[in-house]
Amino acid sequence: KSGYGWDKLLKGRTGRVFINMDANPWITRILFGDNSNEIRNSIFGFAGIKTRVTKIGPLKEVTPEKKENWKKMVFEMGKKAQ
Image (cartoon, rainbow, N blue to C red; front, side, top):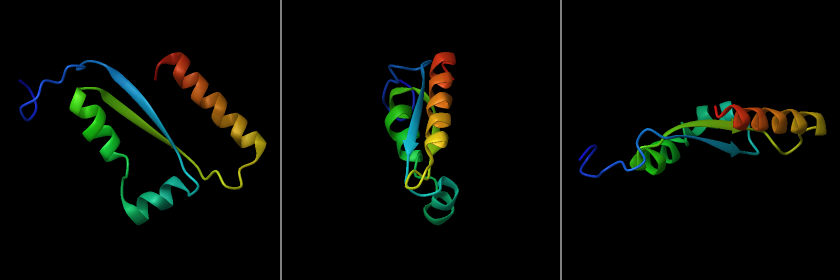
């Protein structure tokens, strides 16, 4: 047994989570703290998956060019399994 009494059955695996938000990620972090800990540690960490989180935003008034840049960034990260 590892951890706090459970087997991390997916240990050695990795994952990436993208969080889309309507607020600026830095402002959100300053005001509310790191809200991705629950996802990274409690959900994926419980299973043994090392997870990286990428926050994208703000989305409210984003230009089509910026959306396209984000799409390319996400696609390239997925292709390279980063």
